[in-house]
Amino acid sequence: MKAVIIGSGIGGMATAIRLASLGFETEVFEQNSFYGGKINSKQIGAYRFDRGPSVFTEPHLIDELLGLDSNNDDEFSYVKLPISCCYFFEDGTRVALPTGSKAVADVLSEELGEDKKNIYSCLKALERNYNAVYPVFIKVSLHRIGHWLNRNILRAIKRIPFYGLFHTMNRVNSKTFKNNKTVQIFNRFATYNGSDPFKSPGMFNIIAHLELNIGPFMPKGGMVAISDSVYKKAVDMGVRFHFDTRIEEICYNDGKVSGIKHSGGVVECELVTSNMDVHFTYEKLLPNLKSPLKILSQEKSSSAIVFYWGIRKSFDSLDVHNIFFSEAYEEEFNHLFVKKSLIEDPTVYIHISSKIEKSDAPDGCENWFVMVNAPIDSGQDWTAQKDNLRTNVIKKLSGILKEDIAPLIEIEEQLDPAMMERMYSGKNGSIYGNASNSTLASFYRHPNFSRHLYGLYFAGVTVHPGGGIPLALNSAAIVERCVRKDFSIGQ
Ligand SMILES: Cc1cc2nc3c(=O)[nH]c(=O)nc-3n(C[C@H](O)[C@H](O)[C@H](O)COP(=O)(O)OP(=O)(O)OC[C@H]3O[C@@H](n4cnc5c(N)ncnc54)[C@H](O)[C@@H]3O)c2cc1C
Image (cartoon, rainbow, N blue to C red; front, side):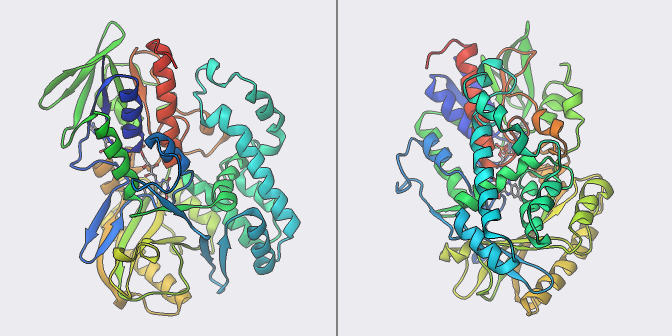
C-alpha cells in the first residue's frame, strides 16, 4: 500500500519513518526546496543560523525515532545545557537559571528571595503533573477512547485538583511565588505554544518541568541536525522525497482517500497524512469537504519577528538562551492577541548557538537569533513594524548590556509573520495553529485522523497534542497507532 505525506516538517518526516516501518511505500511531497519545515538553517556570510526552533527538550523522542540506544551516536548526539536560560530585567537583575529542581530552588532563593522549599515542591508537583498527563493526553489520541481509557487515567484524574485547570497560569504562579520576577519567568512558558499566560490554564505550567527540572539540550551541529538525521533515516528506510512540489488537492472517492494532486499530476495512494497547517488542509486541499469550523475558527497562536544578526563581539554575560523581559508583560500579551500590534518595550529572546558550536560564528563574534513574539498577520505594514521594533530592541539591549549594539551588527536578515505564512504555509503566520488561551482550546485541537475520510491523517503542531518539536513527534506516533488499528496492522 502507498502512503503520501504532505510536508516535510518534523511531524511529516517522523510520520514517514513510522509508516515506512509499517511496510507502506511512502512518499513525501514538500513545497519548499529543503526538508525540515521550520527546522532549517541558513549560512549568512561567515555566520550560520538555525532559522526556527532553538529550544530542544525531550531528545529521547528523536533517539527513539532514529532507533538509537543512547546519546553518543555519531548520527545524532546532543549536550545538556547547564544553564537553561539567562533572564534579564530592566532594573539590572540577571538570573542565570541552572537545571534540576534543587539547583533552580537555590538560585531563585538567592537571587529573587523565594522560599527554597516552596520552589522545590512546586517543581516536584509539576513533574508529577507532567507524568500524570503525558500518557493520557500527550501520547495518545484524545479522540479515540481506546487510547486514553487505560489504567493511567485514574492517576491523571486523581491529580486534577493540582493542574490549575480552572485558573490561568498567571493566577497560579502569582499565588505560588513571592517575587513578580519569578512569576514572569514561569508565565513565560505559555509562549512555548504561542499562548498568553494571562489566559491559558495553569496546566501549562508543566512546560516548565521540561526546561527547569530536566533541562534543554543542544544537538551537535545545531538544531538543523534534528532535521538532517531524521531526513537521513527516512531516506535509508526507502522514503522518497519530492521537493518544490506543492500539493493542490487531496482526492477521494466514496469516503476514502484515493490520492493527491500536484501541478505535475496525480499520485494514487491509500493513505495521506497532512503535515501542513490543518486550516489550509481543509481550505486549499479539501474545499468540498465539510470542515470542522468550530476548531478552525478558534483564536490562532502568536507569530514572531526574528532578526538574524552576526555580531562582531562576544558577550560574557550572555548564554545560549537569553530573555530580556518587558516591564509591561500583561500589556505585551494584550498587544499580541487583542490589539494585534507590537508593544514599545517587548520581551526579547536571544539564542546564540555559537556559544557551543564555535564554527557558527567567526572567532570573537556571535550569531544572534533575536526573536520577539508578534501578532499573526492581519495586514499590518511589516516593514514599518520591523523598523520600529529594530530600534526598540537595539535600545533595550544596549541599555541592559551597557554597550551600543547597533555598530556591532555585521550582517542581518529578518523574518516576519507574513514571510512565515509564505515560507511554511502557517495560517496568518501563526506558529502553532490554534492558541491554547482557554482550557477548552487546549483540549479541543483537531484529531490526528479525519472523521469523514478513511485514510486521511494529520501530524504536526496545528493538531493534537499541540505546539513544539516534542509534540509534533508525538503526533506522528499517534498517527502510527491510528493507522495500525484502521489498517489492521499488528504490533
Ligand atoms: C521562529 C520559530 C521559533 C520556534 N522555536 C521553537 C523552539 O524553540 N522549540 C520548539 O520545540 N519549537 C519551536 N518552534 C516551533 C517548531 O518549529 C515547530 O513546533 C515544528 O518544527 C513544526 O513542525 P511541523 O511538523 O508541525 O511542521 P512545519 O515545520 O510547519 O512544516 C510543515 C511543512 O509542510 C510544508 N507544506 C505546507 N503546505 C504544503 C503543500 N500544500 N504541499 C507541500 N508541502 C507543504 C511546508 O513547506 C513545511 O515544510 C519555533 C518555530 C518558529 C517559526
